[in-house]
Image 1 (tube, one colour):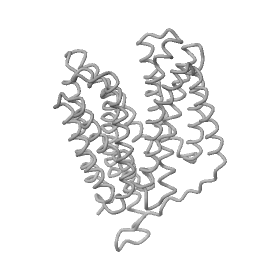
Image 2 (cartoon, rainbow, N blue to C red; image 1 turned 180 degrees about the horizontal axis):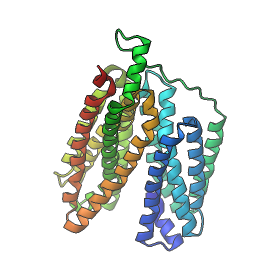
Image 3 (tube, helix red, strand yellow; image 1 turned 120 degrees about the horizontal axis):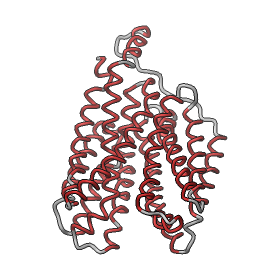
Image 4 (tube, one colour; image 1 turned 30 degrees about the vertical axis):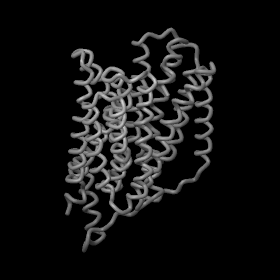
Length: 374
């Protein structure tokens, strides 16, 4: 939402690039704070209630973007970001709890809808800008979000978390002892591996989506219109791969999907640096998107499925690490490009991130608590 809206916001508030960066930074920073808060709040409140309050904060924050004052927009951006930090982990937890035994498919379907939003919002904002309605878009979005929060608050969602599975030959007493053990070093190591995975995933995803248009313009002879289509190709590929994953996941399992998806994202992001043909670059972006599509939902699903009930209290940490990755890697690419004068060199950080992401998948498989306890 912020990318397409930023020019009109800058014009309305007389905002320079420094303040525009502060606006976007407020969203990311407060999203990290919101995700960390989930870790503490889940001890006292149901995830569904936290999700509803997160949507309320997103709606109220969006209304701040309709203000004529930059300060109100800045504070609204912080509130919106904090709300997103609450919504992301709790929405994924709710989907997992309502679909015991089908965690990967449920989270993939949820993220399909996230992808639809990512694809449809920019054209909708562009239409509003073209017709002089850009000042109204945040108000309409905020009102719709608040309405959705009101409807969600009326739903009674029962907690359906599946009971822990007993190891072969174990008694209930032994299982309880094992459960206590899983909440200590083994779960901590598994959580750190999952945090690394999401840190790298979100960093690679945001970097590809954010820098692909600029890279096409500088590295090839692509027209402005063709270069602007790169994010659409990227998000369209992510959406398509998530839809495909829903059908194949029950047959192959989450780990196979994570390994293949991470490897394909590495191939696509590395291929991106080779050709000088705009069409080939777009194909490489799409290949990377197809690989990345199932990684996030299945990475979260793998963590929740193998981390046990104690993992739900640590979900906020995992999502917070993803938000940090989304802020750090794109910023590093910009810094390296500015200092070296070579965007292609800076973009090489993306396949490096994808390679590390593939390694993080293997590390998570190695460190999963039930395997360590076996």
